[in-house]
Length: 291
Image 1 (tube, rainbow, N blue to C red):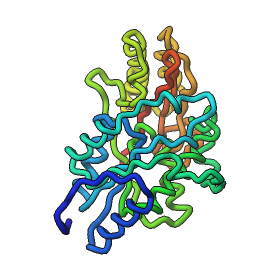
Image 2: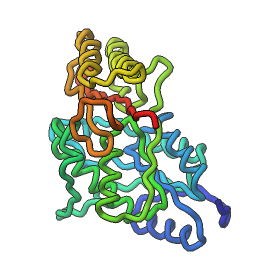
Image 3: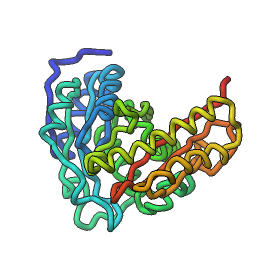
């Protein structure tokens, strides 16, 4: 990697400013990484930033709670926010810029252009959140146009989102690499999530049913079980035994296409979405046949 000119930490709120700074870095021959986030950053986000900092000359972290990926009854207004803490984490991790636009900066009052997708976005979260991935694809494509990164980093906890973004980049011939990064978990196994802050003490304990179900399913797959339905049945059993858990879905799909598939004869994603109280949490494992 190249060192370029003296590296400073920038907080930018405008599209024009973020685009201009990224263009300066590219003109200097520097490689730019992008970590798109909705803020309230935790160790999972930091793992993405750390990897981008290792693999690129400059890293941009976007902090933007994207209104168009929330449904009408979802938690847009209550979604946790702490820009000051986010910027401190990004600076400490070695990011070069935080791009933190307001919604009015990203979407004009008469905004009417969206990026929509079929197939890959239809199953799993797409069933219960039918407009979600339309909002994700739109905002991520805008971020790619603004920053024009060489690489962008997404966590495997949001595995369907990762698959959707990879398909969008392929289908629209976008000139960047999408990098998936492993799930980061709490010491007790719970997948890191900004929404974990919503959980009461009792709900926090109940939420461990997700990681227990995922661990059990993964162990069965690694032990040679080829029948996906048997794995899903075991996972459902663990979740159903938790009184505070309400299952949205427990499903197995092909990892590349997110098409329902219950045989472990190709790379598969086993994913769960569960309401603990009013909080919707997700978790998963990815299994690939040995070469």
